[in-house]
Amino acid sequence: MNLNKISKKKVVVGLSGGVDSSVTALLLKQQGYDVTGLFMKNWEDDDTDEYCSSKQDLIDAVSVADKIGIDIEAVNFSAEYKDRVFDNFLSEYKAGRTPNPDILCNAEIKFKAFLDHAMSLGADVIATGHYAQVRENPLKPGLFQLMKADDGSKDQSYFLYRLNQAQLSKTLFPLGQLLKREVREIARQAGLINAEKKDSTGICFIGERPFQEFLSKYLPPKPGDIKTAEGKLVGRHEGLMYYTLGQRQGLKIGGSRDSNGEPWFVAGKDMQNNVLTVVQGHDHDLLLSEGLVASQLTWIDEDAPITNWVYAAKTRYRQADAPCEIDRLNADMVEIKFGQKQWAVTPGQSAVVYESNVCLGGGIITAAIN
Image (cartoon, rainbow, N blue to C red; front, side, top):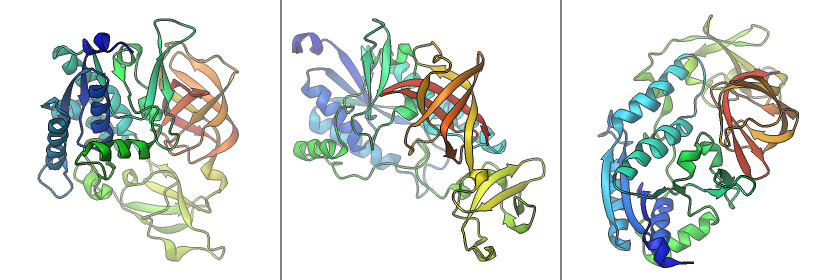
């Protein structure tokens, strides 16, 4: 490795205060890059309440930057986050769908607003602590591929499928070949303050908090009936936007179980009549889908997958890849058919397509095919 060549490259690392981004910056510094840290603050609405951790995160990020000997800058993208991510988040929930804000956040904030700002600072590339990999396409020189991380339990390519060629060509993922335990060990060996810090969870940049209470600040509750698929009234819901397909917790109808004793799951939302449909049993037919229709398509290689070719896809992050075929319905809509029925395919979530370890792209689920 030619360190003299690398040392000429300036990289801006998104430092969140967590262990992953901290080790990312450390590794790049050790490899000879000119590293600058950038801490992004993207949420201000209830910044003083008990759920906001941004102040501590900034303290941790500054501590890490000082420890490894790099400069750090804080930047506020709250306006961009509200316009590009949170408004869409609310409109999707209002329409009865279940969006994934992390995916939009990556495409619009971490790899757009952040990337643009980094380039204005004179960066050659950016880097984040995502568990994923980028490589030049061996069959198409000059084009880049998004690859799964070596640590399958941490792979985050699902959240990155909307990245384009321009973004991937300017991005480094130093953790892509590491296991999570190796990352923590590197942090411990370097004496980083956040080596044992718990991973962040919850809504991207907003954090972990009581979801229904948070959402009710923006979307007023609209209570209605909970009914079985046969139309039997079994309870009341507090607003359809608070529930998602496959949900088991929080239905408050446990005492209404029929004689089979199976738990209840959300199987549908009737937005017109404000009715939540529930069924009993994890593997009820209404929770299983043979396929789906997806739109708002994004293909990393800019070419759609070949029709009638066997790929793999997942409809949620914590899910095994499922063999599938793709039929193109039009320029911005595909039908994905699975070899085995998939559980709780949810409109608003993303269907992400893979060919082996290469993430090809995907789209937003508009409907399940049962």
